[in-house]
Length: 227
Image 1 (cartoon, rainbow, N blue to C red):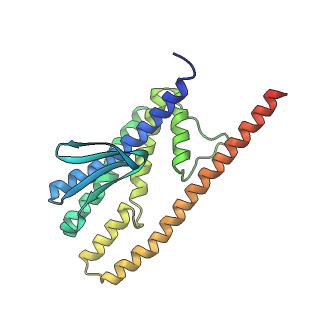
Image 2: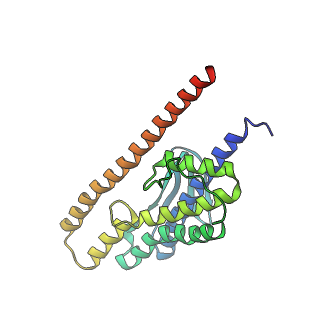
Image 3: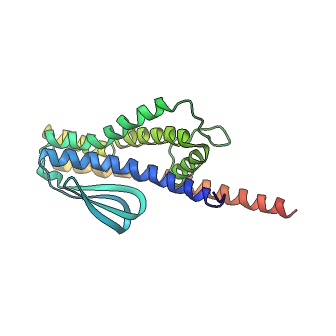
């Protein structure tokens, strides 16, 4: 195979892992919601213009251009809190259930860590994609192990009691069950949304730092090659 083609195969493999992980998460939400009696309007993988639409076992699925995140358009208000909470937990638990066996089964395969030896506490999309591309270059076992870590991380992150993550919705549903006034629930949503935005900002800044470091490394490499 042409060596120039291999990097693109690694990128496609990495994007595939992210897309499948997101699809698993959102499909678990949608299936659980449908079984509980809620209307599932659409399950989306990615954002941006739609590439294609199909129905999978009666669920409307749309795949969009940018494989970053996803959503399950569910009419949650149709479900009372006792049936809404299992639907909210289904996505994170599906990721953890799939991710843990992958981590254990492929634990012997190497995964390249950052050169300074530090584990990234919270990687944004670019950091996650870069790690998956490196793992894809190392082989199927390495990307399977990292896919497991990605799914476990995705599941645990979504369980954080922060709105608009699944964990935040669970807390709001529990507050509703206990008769907490709506204004108090809305105040919780506003406050924790700020925390979510700060986390997202930290991830974005980390991406920008990694991108800047990569550009500088590339410039130094080109300069050394010319010399």
